[in-house]
Length: 95
Image (cartoon, rainbow, N blue to C red; front, side, top):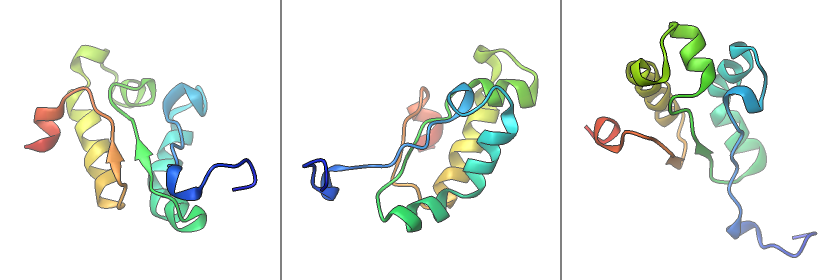
């Protein structure tokens, strides 16, 4: 509210992939601590890991073949209680 925006209009997007670091480990640490971030800031969390570079580097596949890695990261984020997941493959995530 210091900037004039009510907290009920804010969400936390920790950023993933190259935004955090060129090394995939930084994104893995964030994934492991999503519940902590949510609790620390008392804000809803949005995660977008779909086809991100850190997943492609970990599984050594190009973007068009990174679906299983993406889905794994999205399901893990869901298990950590995130409020929203931005994805490129809504059907796979919904299933």
